[in-house]
Length: 178
Image 1 (cartoon, one colour):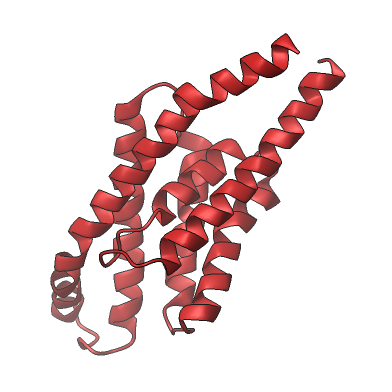
Image 2 (cartoon, one colour):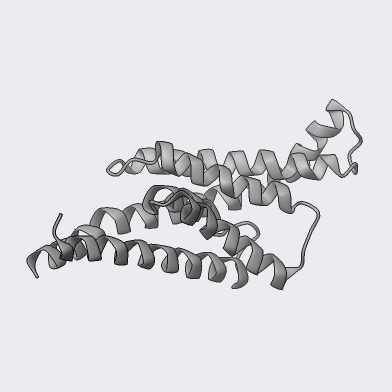
């Protein structure tokens, strides 16, 4: 690998990290419908695009830490942050370039996993009782919020796929021609 290509790859990693951080922080702090955020896509693409494991894991955790500090800490942070980390692992192992259907399916999988983890945390707070019926009631009560979350995951996963499919090759071609 020539020096120019190596520098481009390092720069690409830094741009990916910075871009994902800005998108995640902005998407969480700017006004939006409930749960319609880029966080699921951010976690998936952090895992897929950022090579060092520590950096891929650090991006969604940094977004969550900074925005939770501004929005207010909550007792569910281990579950919400855990849901983001699960997305990084899904992105690393399953998000392959090329297929929009695979990316969209993985976005829906990530939003469903986040829904299950975060609402399990709500149930553990005891508001619904520590029974199986209470767990089901907790999940049923959260369903009205899930459609925004799934739409957000589909929207932002699609945007990430478009960037990967069309913008990255253009940038790589410019560097290779230089």
